[in-house]
Length: 220
Length: 241
Image: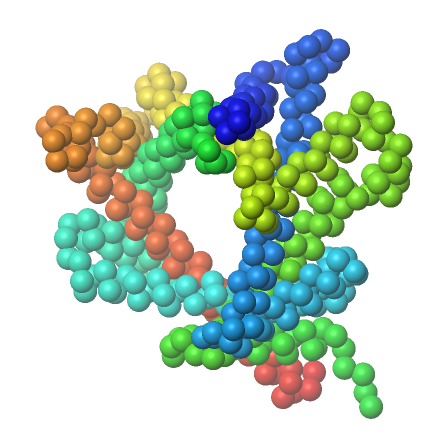
């Protein structure tokens, strides 16, 4: 029974995956809609729709879990339970207002504009300080060639991006501006392409392992 | 009593929240924690409301309200309505530890589709275009000097193209796709591959250095905008504008 269920799940993952994957490489508009292949590709859109629905439900389950974790913390009055209480009130209030009035309503947008947006922007602003501190710490604690190249490149790009450190007029700045452009457009572009290709190859291998049922993250 | 406009209250709350978050500069404190927990609560509630309004309601609930159960009897209704309901029910089994193994069925579908999207997206969105762009740098049309082009300009372009390609290849070699494992589990490569891998490490450091500088500049601009916003709020409150 257990093997049967596992095979069914694996077949489900492989079958739906292959149908969706084929859609990337076949010109669908060339296939007659009433042919068998045409119907399979019609099914592809349905499967994508089901996957979107399941992703939304998975999000719902995640939110329910978040609520439960913090609810337990509040009921047991564990460390930081007051913060959990704030989270629960904010979560329930926003969710109820969003469900009743709609996420586009004035009240929900008020919460979004007055809390979510400034928090996101301020956290990004904090990142400036965190990044600068991390840069200094790197110089202080790790003095090898790779760290030196990293920090040196960052400094050259910052100097060449001016204004601020150097006046934007004069030979000195134009040298650094040219060097910055060369670093960004030649060296970093090549490195970034290598990283992108590496990530893509890694993703393809991981995806193919799932599609060939070698990896089965949906359970045994 | 004069009516306070909603956008003014919105601005005041946003300013307080900004100060609460920026207070992290002096260390982790109560104000920062309140703001972050508030943020997580609101963001989660908002995400849940969006998912319900845009996906769950139109797929599962609205057809039931519009057509009732009669739609279930048609073959088209089974595909667009009955199966999504069944998948949703199976997915909800994940909430119960006793029944969660039945939730593996919709998760398998989700994983299968996700893997296909990742593979398809990586091939068509990254692998093919980036490989073509790299190969295009050394195609005769770009690598050979154009008519009337000064030799120094052509040479500069050719060296840049070669350097870009060396950077790409050495970074890929550093990722150890083709390395064999030795007895200790480490990567075993030829001397040339070792040199290229080290070069790749340097190119990665340069790339991350450029990214770091870009991120630092962008976040400094955002920090300045936040201070500008606080300045505007104080001016408006004090000035009564």
